Image 1 (cartoon, rainbow, N blue to C red):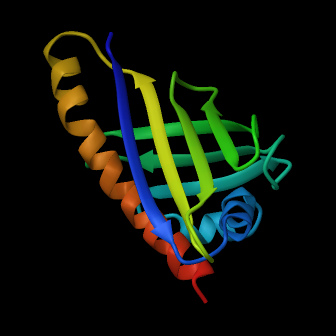
Image 2 (image 1 turned 90 degrees about the vertical axis):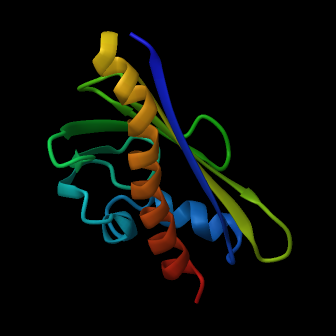
Image 3 (image 1 turned 45 degrees about the vertical axis):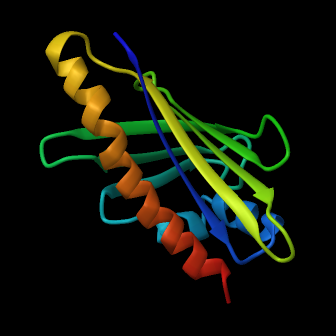
Length: 147
């Protein structure tokens, strides 16, 4: 099994604290940011950053749906880590200042991919597909906070 990684970033015209707080608001803003690839969103514990337990289904392709149950931690300032209890998938959100009134939001997801030829295709195509999904989420985030 090879490790698969998908990383996407965006400069957002809002301060880092506002962007981070919006991402960490699982009981409010976060659900509204999700593109159509996400369904069955449910906060099961917490709802604001560290200590949140959130469920959703992610339809990455027409044939592939991941049932995710994510534990959220905040290991450092400006960072959210979502660790899936149902798989090896870990998503890290990092928000840093990027000049006056701007911030950089980076989302990186890693997981243990399949072996063999299926693993080759997963490692080749999955990061692009997930990148498109996160591009849409980051665009929604920017639209929410750039007011």
